[in-house]
Length: 157
Image (cartoon, rainbow, N blue to C red; front, side, top):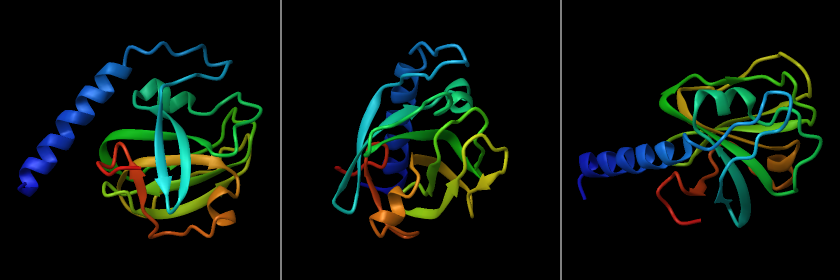
């Protein structure tokens, strides 16, 4: 399949995926949101990630949660690659964040403290950001360059 066909197929799939989830109700900003999930993998580790695709879902993210399962997280999907910056307003649990390239390669990682406005940014333009419990990546020896698999990266988990 040509690169053009791969890109077009991925764009169509992502548009359908995003449009289907655009109608998922988002709770008020003073409570955690609950979004559809997707299974991802890094090395031999499985992740159950909620998927945030709309600007409102991005804004709320993991706010107001008091805990999260040991292999649970949230993947943020943006329409276009750009420098993505995250902070922890109203986020009660410490998180690790991975900035991920289109092919699933982790570009950079960072640790974020609860209820802070300190920006944590991607080292280069990305469309995907994965938040996990603090230390999740380091406890598994995962660093920049590791590959995330599963949807939306077009590879099996």
